[in-house]
Length: 136
Image (cartoon, rainbow, N blue to C red; front, side, top):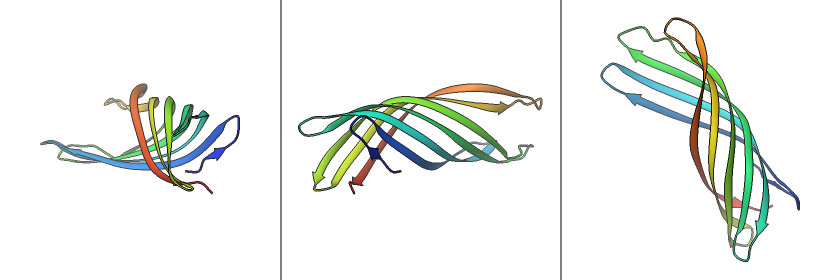
């Protein structure tokens, strides 16, 4: 993503994605997720590093596929998330810097029931981000 730094606020619009899978004796599952989010933060510049406190909001789409001897059709669901976290930027040389974030997030999404209905669930997660950046 990009980061727009102003004196009073920092805006970080982001796109992301991931793939996960698991396997046991009964089923093999693969999940692909894509997300778009916006992080809004306040930054404090210290002598060697910059620290920030920010909030994040975003939307996700999740597609799951299953391989099993039973019946388990693929499914696609959407989710929303809100989070709060801290960030750190450590200058290396010139415009090059390391960045890291630690955030707690709440994700809300719909889950299919075995009887064909749906219900909404929430999950709490901890997310870390590490990166190498260049100030333009």
